[in-house]
Image (cartoon, rainbow over all chains, first blue to last red; front, side):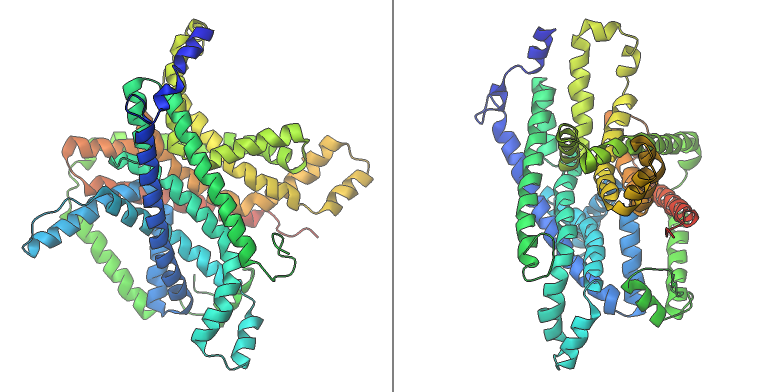
Amino acid sequence: MLEALLNAFPNLALLAWDPPGWGANLGRGLANSLQIALGAYALGLAIGTGGAFGKLYGGPMTRDLLAIYTTVVRAVPELVLILILYFAVTDLVNQGLVSFGYDRIQISGVAAGIAVLGVVQGAYSVEVIRGAILAVPSGQLEAARAMGMPPGKAAWRITLPLMLSNAIPGLANLWLIATKDTALLAIVGFAELTLQTRQAASSTKAFLTFFLAAGLLYLMVTLVSTAIFGRIEKWARRGQRSGGAGQ
Amino acid sequence: MGAARPTQRGGRSMIELETPTRFWQTHRIVMAAIAAVVVLACILLLRWDWLPKYLPLIGEGIWRTLWLLVITSFLGFFMAIPLGLAQAAGPWYLAMPAKVFCTVIRGTPLLLQLWLLYFGLGSLFPQFPAIRQSELWPYLRQAWPYAIVALTFSFAGYEGEVMRGAFKGVPGGQLEAARAMGMPRFTILRRIWLPLAIQRALPTLGGETVLQLKATPLVATITVVDIYAVASRVRQDTFIVYEPLLLLAVVYMVITGVIVLAFRWFEHRVPSRVA
């Protein structure tokens, strides 16, 4: 019984950085995952900010189109969206290139991953940012208007700082979702952490060792990001009365 | 959608009240027409000749997806109640493990958890003769028990966190009143605390269930044949790329719509204000 358990964890030397071990592969996978998560998060934030303002202040057409975008993306599993967008985007880009007389190109996994996850993240961040803007007390904006602030300045000085403290918890959640969603790219064959782990595990047969190691890496990313976002929230809530986290 | 709904809470109702517009505005009619043309073009121009042949398989896949969703949501919710209770009011030796469980589940990708259970434990179990001779072995050799365990844990992890907040959010006066009436602790939980907490968690429960639906296609990677796996098989068999994926998206959107409507109906039936 004990022997079998020991066999399941042959030795931790498999996780060593140098070639007999697979540490370098896992490290590269983690770097890839983080790179895609960061890119997708940034793209999602850009889409989210634009979309939130469009949904709040845009014309009826913009509003309806954005509503369709957020509803569809949030109703279909990320895995299916990734496959559709992955095939469709690479196909469209290549068809465009061919029709303009260029050669077909191989779209890099990183670019495709960032684009696809960014579109998914965007739909969620539209809602987060829209909710945060709506939660800004209207008296604050009216006061700014009464003082004669132009709309741009009021947005920058009043809405943005006030909505930030409301948006941070939701945005922190989105970042965690972004890091975990990169694992889905393993299914389209992109060498991020989960796929690297699976390859290492199936070639050494040490499944438990590698999957537990990868789980630990993801968990560390989560815990570190949670701590960082906690700091940011504290900063964003500075000067607010009974904000819970701050003074 | 556009009609005024005074029951809505917060600033949203204000905005909707200011513009009590009809649903069928001019631009919506144009958009609906464009959408109809796109759908017609999809039906007429794309290849759907594979559909009759795979129809039984598709039905089976949808059935399996729904079944996985219902079972794991129910089991997960029943696991979430003690997890939330332990974190909200339990002693530290119960609160700590519950918190660690929720953090680990929420901090790692579901795909990794699924593969850890299926490949990791699945490769560990056969090494124990005791397990191989037990009556559970025929089940442990298949993929679906691992899928159910992973999805249940995932739902319990996320919902446990929600239930923690819900248990904490129940007004203390309600519990004090129950205690003052001389109710035993378990009766308080059953009659006062739990119903009030579930009522508070209900709005998020619908969202969690939709998220759970969106997590189910991952089980296709461990050879459970749900609707996603059927679509992948069509793609591999016929080399048709877009059509199965479009069908898949439509199926998931319909199921999501049904879940959202069901929870809305359910929420309307539960009285939302106490006295």
